[in-house]
Length: 153
Image (cartoon, rainbow, N blue to C red; front, side, top):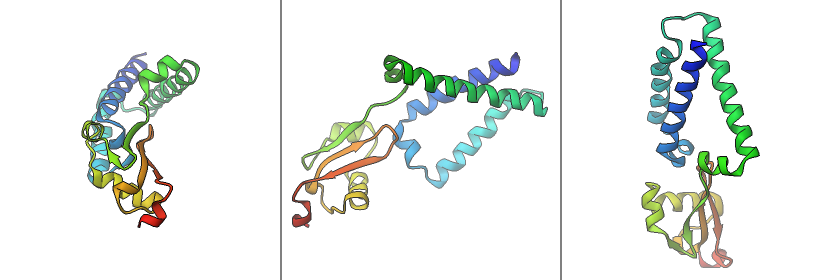
């Protein structure tokens, strides 16, 4: 039972920490971010396993984390209100060629971040060529070019 409680507590703590760091942090993982994730995993090992390093105990903790994650997915699917609390919503970053600086600032993003996505996904070079740029719930940026963006370039 101790392993299940430890698993639940660590799940909640990690969920809250990753929710606070924002969706961009999860979508654009740098090498350093990956190393930090590994360190987090190592640091949580002791919290999860305590002094018991048995395979059985580790399996119970892993099963608990996966069960809580699946249950959370089910609740998100079944109850829209729960989904609104646990998941983010898409955010418009650029509207009709105008960057929404307050949203960009809040999400710790720059116009250059949006332009990079615009070049990669829509083949546009200037912010004025972007009709919509949306920060999706997954952390990726969707770009809809202006109807005449091909003739502007």
